Amino acid sequence: MNLLIVGGFLGSGKTSILLKLARYIAGENPEYMSKVVIVENEIGEISVDDKVLSGFGAYSVTNMFSGCVCCTMSGELVSGLNQIQKDMNPELIILEATGVAFPHNIRETVKYSIPDANCRVCCVTDAKRWNRLLIPMGNLLPDQLDSADVILINKVDTVPSETVDAVEQSIRQFNDTARYFRISAASEIAPEVFEAVLGERG
Amino acid sequence: MDNKENLEENKKDCACKGEGEKCKCEENGGEHEHLRGEIREKGHKHGEDCGCEKHKEHKQGEACGCKDHDHEHRHDHEHCHDHEHGHEHGHEHEHDHEHDHDHEHEAHNHDRHDHDDHEHDHEDHDHEHEHNHSPISVSTHETSVIGSYKLSIPGSFEEAGAVLDERMKALAADVVSSGGIIGHIKANLIQQGPCMMVSITEDESNKLYYEAQSCNADGVAIVFLISPQRLMELMETHFGEFERAN
Ligand SMILES: Nc1nc2c(ncn2[C@@H]2O[C@H](COP(=O)(O)OP(=O)(O)O)[C@@H](O)[C@H]2O)c(=O)[nH]1
Ligand SMILES: [Mg+2]
Image (cartoon, rainbow over all chains, first blue to last red; front, side, top):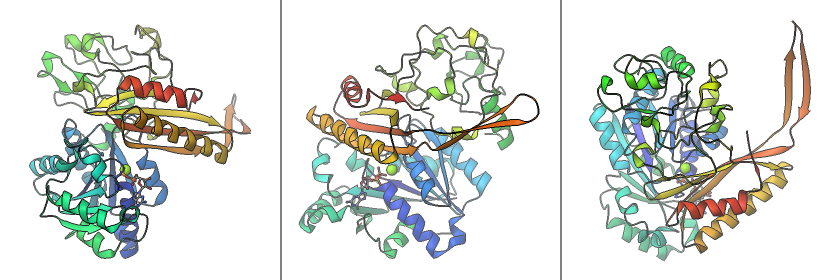
């Protein structure tokens, strides 16, 4: 099982990036696209992103559980992933975590229960709101970065580059081992970003 | 989980219509969760009578007035048909965190399952208070406060879109002026379009065509640092005039 976990705070741009990533994968290899399953995990009683993603492409979108899978719903996560693998045998499962999830916990759960899973974690951060949210959301934002392989500093179109520098410096305090990219999901995202996010596949 | 066929079967058979509930019967190895549509390890389906004391209390189709299920329900009311259920939607729910996820199951692609053949004995539902099918509700997840809304907004797509946009911005502004932090406030607006009713009384069908003149807005407001009560008040202010969308 190849699993890409896309995490990051609410509204940081995960879905926007996923739309582009899906298009990138489709453009690169249309057959591969049919082998990608996107799993949406949203909190609340109403899901929004799954409809948007389904509306955009011919790939499979499931919204198989609700409530946050990083903690209390971990059993559902594992059985859900196994079910997808069994029913659809995808080459890649992309999980958009809830904006309050700790992707590290998800990875740990998966590693423990599905030991042969190849798991990558991409964390999306919001250059515009990082500084404003860091203190009030101090129990959430830093820990969401734990064990991310790639950190995307998104929305760089909305702030001056000095702000992006400061944001990156701040973020690096919490994870200095990930690969960093500055992007804007509002415009083109370079192929090397997607390649880094996807990592080795197969 | 069992095979797919079983899953589909179970979803249909299950008293909770696949909502997943927490069961605490001793006979079944202590507290355990019924996953939606899952056949549990000890071999009885969710909603099925497993013979144990607890399960005698709420067999398939029966009300779950039992202690073990006394958490506040906030699953999607679409699936509850007309029966009275465990809460008045549209007012505040304080959740025992343990149960927080049990009913958040809008997920699971419900629309794919047909619950119509689900045999519910509605007479048996004996919950104390009624659903009011409110278009808005509030729940919590850890430190986040989540407002959910399902609104029917009259007018064309453009008109409804403009109204929704304006109301969501007003809600956002009020969240901030109440000292809250916006996580994400988002909604899908879907236009209701051409409709057809198919009607059969003998062997031929009659088709009645009509046009639904409204849009449905389904969304959430996930916020922090304001109380669920306050968020409910704000949603009532901005969304209160709309009917619940089906
Ligand atoms: N200006 C700008 N807006 C963005 C960018 N990425 C996302 N957004 C907007 O930010 C909001 C949240 O994005 P979304 O992808 O839904 O975030 P998610 O909650 O992390 O999935 C949406 O209104 C997006 O249009 C970006 O790079 N630049
Ligand atoms: Mg999203």
